[in-house]
Image (spheres, rainbow, N blue to C red):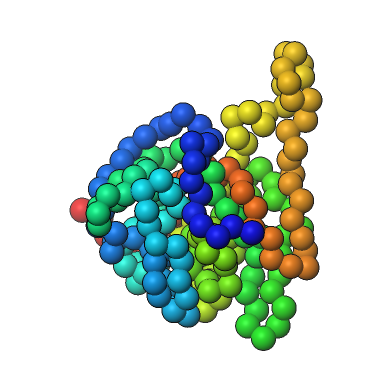
Length: 199
């Protein structure tokens, strides 16, 4: 189980694209003290940690932009907002939160499964992504992206490479929460925009 956000040199699963923008740490969630919906704490940002976070007020959900933290200095955060960048993150297999009833869980993680930015208290520190489109309070979670191959996971036995199988789908559990380190292709496509103001 994770206890902090992804760190280390292998946090990128692709070599780009890169489109960084700077934000104040208060513009990003969930991280730090009281950042979860029930007042729980996610890890405090520190340089060298690379969480996927939402940008802007929680009141904007589920249309918040999402991105991955590239660097942190003082109170300023560089975030990669590029479409289709693939990054490593912890993903929880929870599909639905059911209040007093048991939650439901995905038994496997598969390429193309959607993942959401989730601020539910039930997720371990260092985990901001789940398979659930709603958080445990019933609010819509922003779509963060889709599960994707790491660049060294493609099966390539036909051309004499080292991988005869990709290892996908990956085992999770249909009876309990499992938080697994996976690669996620980030997107900021918010679907139906029919109610958006056109300038």
